[in-house]
Length: 252
Length: 204
Image (cartoon, rainbow over the protein chains, first blue to last red):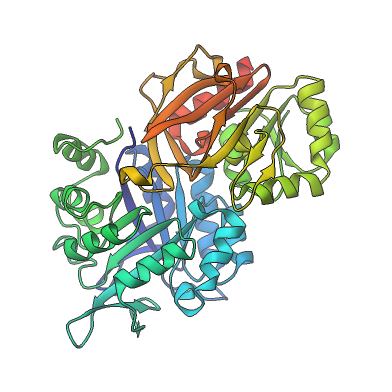
């Protein structure tokens, strides 16, 4: 039986791991390699690395981080941040990533999703969708780390990325991110109901029950979290065990 | 020496590091000379079926692989796309011929009608159909990491060592004489995956 996945997200800025709140208020939370080793030992199901400060000049930080982690952690790794073409995606995969996450580049050039999917297979391509309430209180997709309004409706955009060849969606609520107030279950349900590819819920986990809700209520295939593992005494072990007690299929 | 076939597709780095981590000498190579010299051959692969075949042919690797694996019977391990390519035929994007060492066809997972998501991504346990050296010291309920949208339908059920359940029974492990292949990623399946790679090296 397929197990539900619990996925810590590691945000990178230069060579450090940071944590943000609503995509702002940066806090340094350590060395990504050390943290990844802990998550590996605790049997996290997958790791997502997002370089939130990636530019042409400092892309090497993400590559180096993936490479050092892949040398020691024999588990699935996803990497994203600033990937704009097939050559950059290939480079990241060659450094040990299994999947690549794209966000702003997919919005600027939707054909890029198809191009990646044809080059590396659909299951290698994650499209990351960040959304928040706009001035009219309507939820809208934002690009470039939450700074640029795109006019896209999250559900419609999710359908489009699926159609263009995405293998998975990482759905993040900017309004909830780092607040530990729980997932945006309404939006997660709307997106999981609209697409037939797996959706990873992200943004807002404050308790381990939130993880259960993301799967049971939101129907997400996987749940992502960060703050709860940095700033509380909850661990992957405890989260898995709680999810199991709640009747979810998790790894032993 | 274990030789990982570099045909421009797949996470070769992780496969090599996984072997190294358990003390097994390994190299990544696209040179037919290295395949001739190899003790074990590993064909990994992430990507689409037609591109995989195209690369194997254009790199001139196919003939050497046949000589070494079919001719000299060297232990061979296919991983993910490296399992699927062994089939006679694939249907990803278009119908195309595979390597043809294993009788069968590769078709898309037919599980969406059951409300299941495709790709099949995540950790899943296996159902062993027969004894295999590959599973020595591995707990029967161990989970392995899968990420794929297509599966190999074997024409000869005798080739199937293990399956996994995802809406339908999916071919997870095959063995045919010296040819082994796994649909999941042992190099990404933590301890159980590393044990399987060790078993391939020791007993295959």
